[in-house]
Amino acid sequence: DAGVTQSPTHLIKTRGQHVTLRCSPISGHKSVSWYQQVLGQGPQFIFQYYEKEERGRGNFPDRFSARQFPNYSSELNVNALLLGDSALYLCASSYSPPSGGAGETQYFGPGTRLLVL
Amino acid sequence: EDKVVQSPLSLVVHEGDTVTLNCSYEVTNFRSLLWYKQEKKAPTFLFMLTSSGIEKKSGRLSSILDKKELSSILNITATQTGDSAIYLCAVGTSYGKLTFGQGTILTVHP
Image (cartoon, rainbow over all chains, first blue to last red; front, side, top):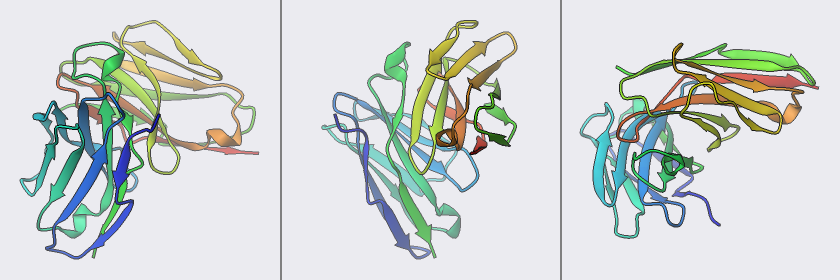
């Protein structure tokens, strides 16, 4: 079975531009979460979506937005890019929303490396 | 604010050594503690712990959760060069948010 897939793998943008990152969850998984990982740090939570509804949002500015589609894939959008947005953006999928048990385990994709110049 | 702290931040050992990685947490609405291994990009799932005192094992790796001490350890026995990676500890809270520690960089020399 295919794991979580993300596109593109790498991206170079300039300050002020916007970017759209895409994620396809593991087949059968209905929950998608997005994380930002800056070099040398652990991933930081940005959003979680379940059944197309936003379930949680981390401490990120409104320049960051996301959505989930009927097929459970997801997009992360970042507007007005800043140099500090340069990071690895990780998508994770899980079978269920937080309801207890192994269904909550989040499996990560390979990430999109974003460089803002 | 939820917080997860890992120690040590980095560790250098030789093949065959046993290592213990530590994770402590302060969060509201604890649901689970997870360990991941990150080599190049995608963190790879290792363990999910929800109950205190029950050891989970997979080959040379094992982990246990202590809810009283708000901590967990990850043990790796008979280390191999392929174990070299960043080990991430994460705590899951009420709406599925994972709060990660900064990671432990493990380097295993031949």
